[in-house]
Image (cartoon, protein in one colour):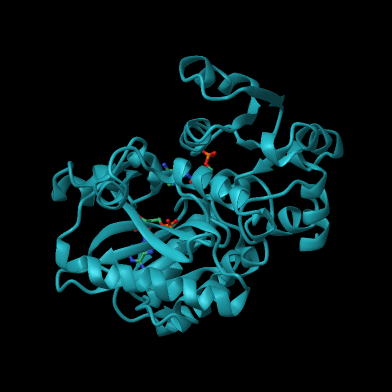
Length: 361
Ligand code: AMP
Ligand code: AMP
């Protein structure tokens, strides 16, 4: 694992007055780059050739480094280029989707905004669960074996991204029937069946609150909320139930976009306490805790119970709904504050107070 000292030695070689903010050209890069430019930073996109078109339409990337594959971020030559440009990286969902936790903690010799040690707590379902439970959050029940299934469960395949391959079951019989069918169709490896994570299905609506943990200001801010727009699950309701039965469709959850939400105000106190508690626990698990944006994935039931089923300890693409502003960012900052800009503001303030080593690890 790359130590903090090593990262800080790299940072020392940088000219702190001309830092560039870099990230992979995908996910929330426009959000990050726009915010960086508004706070006076240069920007560097590590981008696939066919995707560079977005920076023609939206001119927020000063440097574009073309790669064939995002895993090239691990190449020494690319890292040398990034360091030469004084680049600090802001990680987002494509980092964890295309690189492993080990690669990010062991092979990325470029200062990264955030706490690399927390990546281990975030990566595994078990450890994440431990973290959220320790913070006192309400979580869906889990079942160790299909025989224990009671009620409706959502079955999550190991390493499934964006809900692809999730399915629902309501008994060990329906679980085995579905897994046998998936194995038969080549959608599932037989040896993965025992690694499927069985979680109580919570009937409710998805709510993803966005937080920002500021190390410089020692505060957790509440900056916005979104919900996801997922194919095919958000389409199923458009088909009459009798037709659905004939089609035997299972819901899939491929993310297509995000929709902003403003919440019933009486839900805010608990969501705010949840964010504070998650940060406080993170501090105990891996000091200084979360650096910068994070998001809880929650489901809220009809008696207004809030279940958390996941945490992302970095910027989420759902914050893209707030580029410009969101009602909650507005309440705190007035016009023009959003995740990408808030990150850049944190970096600027840390620089002004000579505290850059507290936010880059
Ligand atoms: P991409 O770079 O688009 O392949 O996305 C990388 C990862 O981030 C994938 O796991 C996606 O499921 C996730 N992701 C991308 N866009 C969004 C979004 N708008 N909301 C939530 N997750 C997303
Ligand atoms: P994820 O890949 O964890 O982001 O989840 C994909 C989709 O599955 C999201 O729309 C979630 O709302 C849904 N989901 C995940 N866990 C549960 C659960 N325990 N109960 C109901 N829906 C869930």
